[in-house]
Length: 330
Image 1 (spheres, rainbow, N blue to C red):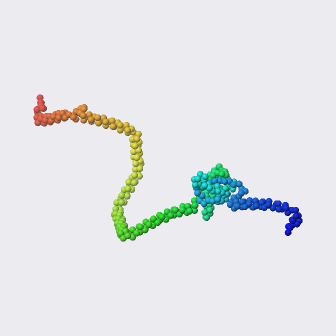
Image 2: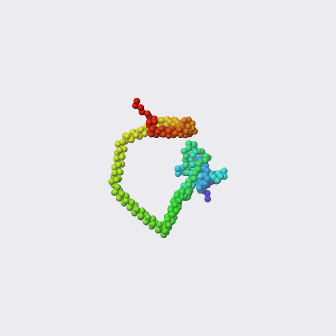
Image 3: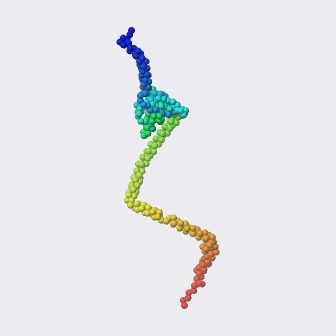
C-alpha cells in the first residue's frame, strides 16, 4: 500500500530515504548532548558555565567524595571534582574543587571540610578571608577539618566523665569514713569526743560566770581605770600644742644631726682616743715623769718616809712645845 506522498508524487520517495540517516544522526547527537548535560546537571555541574579549579591539601578527608558540594555561607557554588594522593607520596590527599561562579576568593580563604547533615555527609565550606590579593584558577587554598560528631561528643562528655570519676572517688571516701564510724572503737571515740565537748561547754559557762562575777566585783575599779584613761586622753588633747612643739624640736634636732659633720667629729674623737692610747702606752712603758712615777716606787717610799718624819715632828712639838717656841716679854 502506497502512502499519501507516494500517491501524490512518487518522485519524492528517494529524497526522503536519503535524508533519513542524517535525521537519525542528528537525533542521536542531540540525545547524547542532552544526556551529557543532564548527567552533569544532576551532578551539580553546568557544562555551559565557565569553571575555575582550586586545590586544597588535607591529611585526611573524613569521608569526602567526588560531587560533594562546595558552599560559601551556605550557598552552593561548586563541587568536589576529584580526589587523589599528593604526588609527593607523603600520605596527604589533594582535593580538586570545581567552582562555577566568578565570585572573588581572597588569598587567605580556608577550605573547611564539615558535616552537612546528621547522616555524616561531607561538604566543603569556603571560608572567605580578608586579603586584598585574590586567587586565580589553579591556586591552592588553605585547609581545615571540622571536628567529627564523635570528637564533639567526646569533648562534651570528657568533663562529665572526669566529674563522675571524681564523684565516685568521693563516694568511696564517704563509704570508707562511714565504715570507720560504724566501728565499735570509733563509736566509743566519738562518744568520748562528744563528752569532752560537753565538758568544754560547761567549763566555758563556768568561765563566763566567773568573768561576770569579776566584772561586777571590779566595777568601781574598772570605772576608775576608764576615768583615768579619759583624763589621759583629755591631757593629751590639751597638750597637743606642747607635744607638737616637742616633736618639732626633735625634728629640728634630727635635722641638725643630719646637717652636722658627725663623721668629722667621729674622726676627731678617734684621733683623740688614739693619742690617749699612745700616752697610756708610754706611761705603762715608764716614759716621762708619769711613767717613772708609775714604774719607780722610790718617790712613793721617800714621800712615805717624809710623812712619817713629819708626824713624829708634830708629835714632839705637841709634847715639848717649849723646845721649839720661846716666849720673852722683855
